[in-house]
Length: 489
Image (cartoon, rainbow, N blue to C red; front, side, top):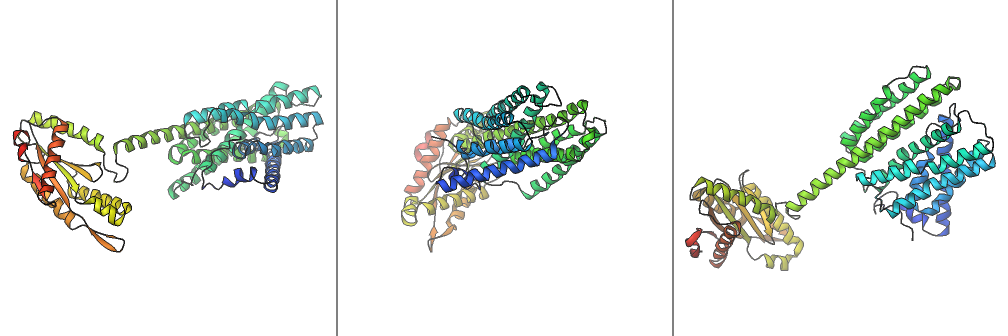
């Protein structure tokens, strides 16, 4: 069974896969649409970029074909085959060369797609692994299946070539490779994005970068046309890297396409008489530099994406998903450091620990529903963060249990803060299902000083203090001492 590229459910391109696998009428429509799209971009590339070598500088349809087969399935390879056949015959190539070019264009999209799917390729290109797989199979190896058969067919049918067969195959490969990298990469990134995540600031930044890239590309080609090679196009590399860093894969691929189109349009304005055998190499270097810049942009963007994903997972591992407070594991680490500092200080109390538990939370869930209970937990978490100092730590242990580590807080300070929190919670009334939900908490407070035990012992003492507050009628604050006096709790 075919596996199309994983398009998000809300992607504007999801219809592509659906139509390609749908009824016969939809399938025919998709085949015609892919054929017309391939022909349009083919004529565009031929019209703008054909130089002395007889080949376009950049072959944009190769990226379209790759995307169609990856996203829509193997069936959509028919359009590129017919499109390439028509374009080759339009260029008055011998039938054998035209068939070889059409077959090569089909294999160029089919074989990399087959290999990428077997290797569980992710078309979002958010990991360096996926970028490398895409570049290796779709950008480097894929165009060989088009360039080599086409060149060999032209050589054996005595097709007139303006350059040596090896150079002809290299130029053919480069044009298709840039098309796969720039156009195919852009379509994959934008089609698999669940939403267009470019902010207004990012769009303005990309507009400025596009202007710079277009100007550098055009000036470089114009300088070449008068026989003066220039390093202006090297500016494209840092500009695409800037786009990758600040705007991700979407920005990098967009700027790469801008550089490619600017180069094509400028090459069209160069008089044909300017093209000479020694100039073909210079123009090819410009095209190759666009390839390098686009590849660099994808790698940088994927590296930043992986770094952001690792940071996000690390954050999720240390924070509670509902309240965004730190979780038990992260809190125990901070409590351990506080205990160590308290032991070194030699004071009876350096810090304090509060154990806070909602009263009758199960009744709230039963009466108003779990959604209301979750809202109560979030509101309580926000209230606790507002009531404590910036150096204090609020965490959710689980369920309706919260803890607060009050650093450098004596007994009087801890007592005042506990009473203040209890009073603030009493005033917390949440409108739920047409009613007002009144919540209260039971709080246990224990000191953390030079005689403090291990983390589990300190937490157990705070837990015992909060249970005593519940036994005394709930909605209470209970202060407790560690050590032998713990029995008082």
